[in-house]
Length: 421
Image 1 (tube, one colour):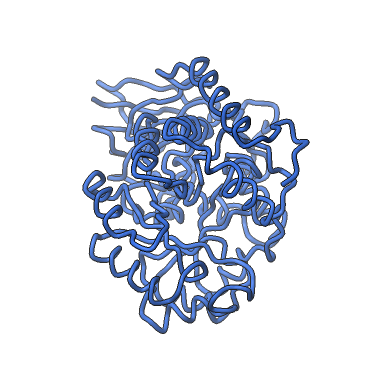
Image 2 (cartoon, helix red, strand yellow):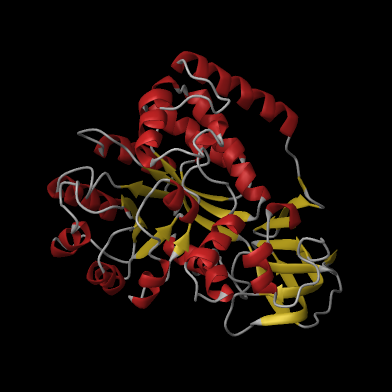
């Protein structure tokens, strides 16, 4: 089976291929077979990309997808209010079916906005049934999803081993409790388990002081040999330049959630300082109660706040750099021959972006989910002409609303924005 995406502006994010003002992308057996100004389409299904920008699918490296039902509720919350509301008030009332719906609808929303690969940072593991429901929700949505299990409690090993048997490939990661939410010895044990099972690790670090290891958590990890190229630090606000350099030296990565970080009162974004230290940041949403769920907004925030970073670099954060952070740099993130055919077609005729001069500059400064015309995952169309394929959205919307209203009633809160934690 061959598909030829023909006649679009091809923004490959591949340094060799570059940007083609008019180009074609040939897909064979789910992979990119060729990228060129013109390709013979004999025997291929033709996808007319005239008036479209063709680029690789976005990669979100950190999203707490289970919280989807409470979108917008925490738009004005501080981090302390968020923790009180989501983890203290709402989370205890989540049933497995609520987790399932949150992950399914959240993953579909991400897919609809062009996110073809997403790391789901799951920390609603009240029991094994909740974890299984989260995985099922991800699997029901067409897209590459990585289940990052943020297991909690004194003995996480049996549960991590159980889930690892369910996800034997590269679809699983371990969300560390440490170094800021547990002792360094506990963190070392968690990292040892992850390495034994072949799992990448992701950990939240932000702010200065107030944690068990003060404002030197990365130095503590480095001293114990707990950093490597499968480590992702989420946020990183407040980390000193020398600790960012330690991450770079270890081959680790950082995941920036610009909207959530700024809204919740974290330290300034570290995007520019990370680049100066030799780190290529990736981008992520974090949580939809406080931030929008599309990476267009994340790119635009970085562009506006951390001036001096070129649009092409910011686009790379959301694509190829995110793929590397997820351990999938050889599989996705750019329109490169041999990689999975994860493609997004943007409507360049839409008046919000027309006329397009510099495509990267246009996407970073003015792009939005409304211009996502088509999405392909491993060569399969999952969205065409602005609509997700094979999804009964009215039925799913009704189920998610019922889930939200039940949780809110059980928690004794209002969802109209009047409730303040």
